[in-house]
Image (cartoon, rainbow, N blue to C red):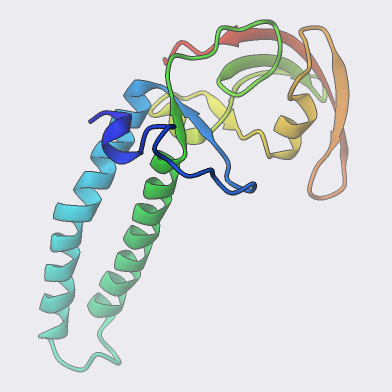
Length: 178
């Protein structure tokens, strides 16, 4: 499935709201997520509907654990469908941006964080797929603090619990889609 199958071309689409976040995805990630959406929207919905119906036939719904578990799973599945639709609708699909030595979405960063060296991806966790690489969004405290920094630059950021953490960007690389 191509991006144009789910999203209108830039010439056809209306301007996005100011608060819409565009997510960069590789074509592989886009295809994987589109396939997941297709499965959840068709087969997944059919399967959960059958499980709910089977549990409903067992009788009293107030004390029917199977029914409540299936309804909870249905809610989670519908939330994932909405999340995928929005992600694919706002996705910018293409090759990983070539690293210019600046921290940006879709780059792999090696940094010394509070004295420990860590390597991670900046962007959506959906980009990484099955990779074991940690992913930090641009909106996370760490991501927001280092976005735009160059190799060798230092900064600090505040964690949600108020702790001040030092960070030094030691390497910025193009995401190779491992």
